Amino acid sequence: REQNTSAIGTLHQCGMATAGEEQPAHAAPTADESTLPAPDAPPPSLSDLGLAVGAEVEVSWEVELTDGSSGSVWWSGLLEAGVEPGSLQLKYAAAHGFEEETRAVRFVDSTLLMDTALQETLSWRMPGEEEG
Image (cartoon, rainbow, N blue to C red; front, side, top):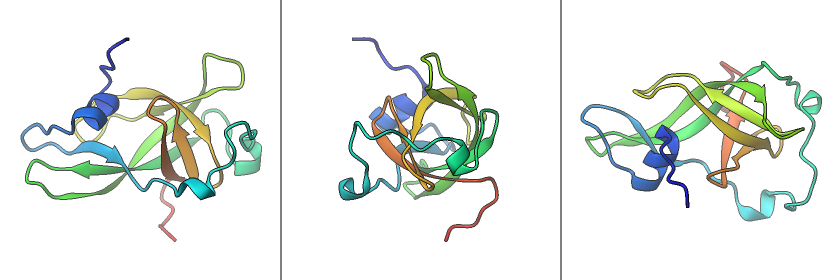
């Protein structure tokens, strides 16, 4: 089995902090399983969501600081075409003490996406939108 060495994947798995740095210990909020579409349901199209490849979105991650405090941060990223036809990637911006990182994603609906490697459902929004 290949070792996951990405910043988000590694921190998600181990939850260890570096002095003074924020880190995404785990994704939040996760969706109630009953709100997710069937695994074989087709994802909404980008145009249905008002998006296109190259669009910027923000994804909510739960971070934990070395002092034990935690909270949500909105992480900015750009949508890219994935390796497989029809797949998508999100190139997260360098932020919160971490370098730029690209993750495979699948949009669930107008407020949720799934990090397909972590199998975590995360809230997303357009840049600057307020939580509603």
